[in-house]
Length: 293
Image (cartoon, rainbow, N blue to C red; front, side, top):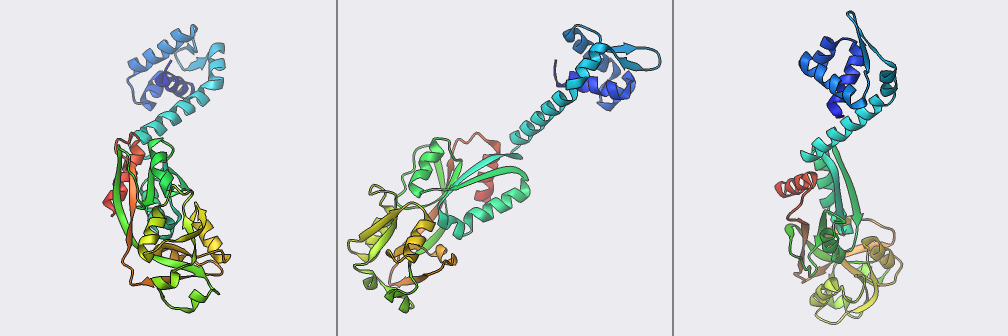
């Protein structure tokens, strides 16, 4: 039994005529008759009573009809979905990102543009620490990521594209003494407690950048693994932080941002993906991102 057999059966039930039913599903009448015969042979009993005027269901045919429409719709839906996925028209794209990639408009712009052209796609986006993203792609937990280059180590099999550069700014509490200045010098930051975007002491990409900016050792008060957590701790007066300038678009109570004078330290965002990606829809998304840089 296959999809075409069930399709022919349902067409004959509705049309009650072999010729009309064959025309409905775009096959010759002889081919249609063979499909019905093959279905009856597999079931082991006639499904229709044939007479000169029309076609009627046998008792066995009535029983088969109870489930045949549901089976047909399920198979048809599965075939349609599979064909669309093979063409890159639908399926899942799982995205990992750091918070400032959203603030920069990188993630949202790509999703919005691609969804407009591929309405069948389902996006799953998750904020995660930059140092986890490449492993998550390699392990198959996400498909692509938006990640800053903070001493990234790219495993074999992954591709990356630079998509944006950003400067660093200082985020401070609004009522701190630093907030009284329009811009800050690196000397203003000396000896301050810093909140670092880092989960543990082994993930010190941002700390190394901070040391390079200040040209001195840094006192770390907190290590946090999400952008919003860093901003929340600064707003609570527990330290200051350096963040990508893209984050200055995020307005939270009790924090403000200041540029650092005399500092030439730029970091890049990368779009990271599997080079041997097997999913058609993910490959379509990767191609779309590349073509819109």
